[in-house]
Length: 298
Ligand SMILES: [Zn+2]
Image 1 (cartoon, helix red, strand yellow):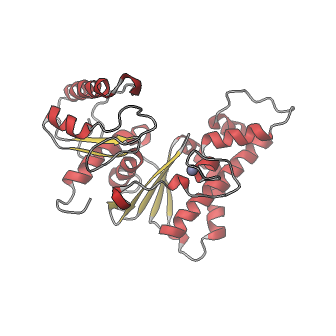
Image 2 (image 1 turned 60 degrees about the vertical axis):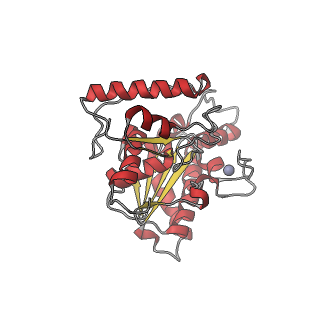
Image 3 (image 1 turned 180 degrees about the vertical axis):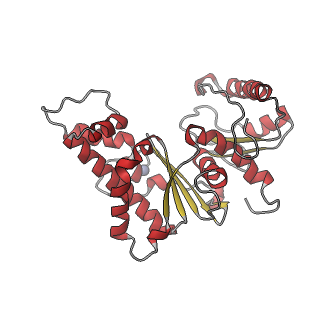
């Protein structure tokens, strides 16, 4: 439950357990919504959803989503609207977070904003002139699959060297493992977080992994700046918890190749909604669709 200033009043969470089927998921969503409303002592006035993709924001249907096997074609927007008799709005989860940061977070008051989350994958949402940017067929653009190095690692999308295959946490781990020699004794289950800690302790290879991460992160951000020159890029996700290690390298890369645009006008800001960014973003989805400036294109 989120109030209309973006404050979380109460929350509940549960693993998706998608394999238990859509009707089981829907039943749990309804039960949890009723309980959180009771906990907060409020009536539900609307429901916003930020979902893993693909999803169809205007029909409300779930598409061929990797993490929701078997849910394709089901429609939580219609089903929750029926259960609660309120309006319901759905967006891709990265778009939801972009709307949250733009409305109530680090991008408040900025009309051209790109939100990028860097963790096990890269996700992003683009807000232009206050509206969520949608492509043909209302599609969510996939900024993580723009190619940085065509000779890079193979990506699940079919290309080689996408931003996502080079600048995520797992990409850092892969690189470190591939370059570690017998004298390095890194644990087998090493994660990006530990690489950042090792870098802070002065581990030479971890420092190179951090430098490489800053370079690839910077290349992708420089491309976004060259293409859009946004007012702000809001950076979130688990890798950005160590942002202090990367930002100088990122800025250096941007300075190298963005000289035909006023790159210094694009602020790099850290996401400010914290661990509730997705939750608050989902609430903002509903506000953006149904409450802000009625009649405006959404
Ligand atoms: Zn890709």
